[in-house]
Image (cartoon, rainbow, N blue to C red; front, side, top):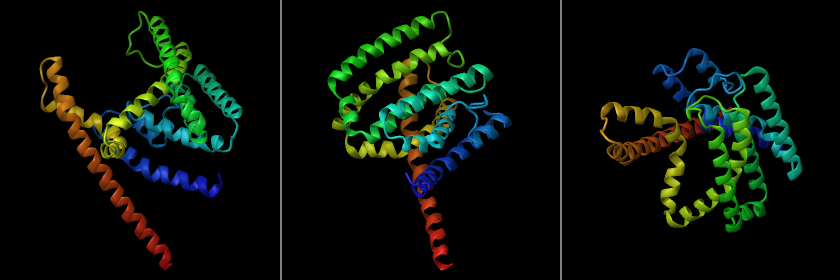
Length: 273
């Protein structure tokens, strides 16, 4: 990719993601969910590197870090070089984690998946093969074995325990790769059965839903707390989730409209200059 294309990529990503992310982060801070230190580190997109990740929003900061190294992958053409680059970066993250205790191992967990996405985008043949039923069958076996080993290694440890260990990482990465063909097969089924307009609407609002769901679900629980598991699930998924989707769609639409107006005004000013 040229410098112009790379610059355009970062501009699109920043404008699409960062303002809404920062607004949500500010909302978390106002609600007392994050400390000043976490707020600053997350706003600077370094929280995953310095041991101050914020619940939910850590994923967005991780994605931005992956965007930062995306040009390395865009300039790497062969499968072998992509694998070598990913292994080197993952190794560096693990070493940094062991030496400092600050670098979040979730970076090393998800980086191979990010690299796989780059490979799929470049190789339609690899994408088609990964979606095949035989590969899906093998992935089910691999996923079950990985899940069993993961459960055994965590025996006696609370499932809500903090950060991944290196042992967890060694088991989780193969399990995540094993799940990719299964998810692809599931996506094919959904795309064939769910109307395209529904898929499009949910996809359009997905990012805003990710940012807003903690606010809406917390508000839903404060407004009404059902008794019993069945009633709680019915309330949260039958009412709170649809409300979350409607609000998220509206927020995304309003943001896109405002951004379009700002960019149009800027272009008009530049033409006049």
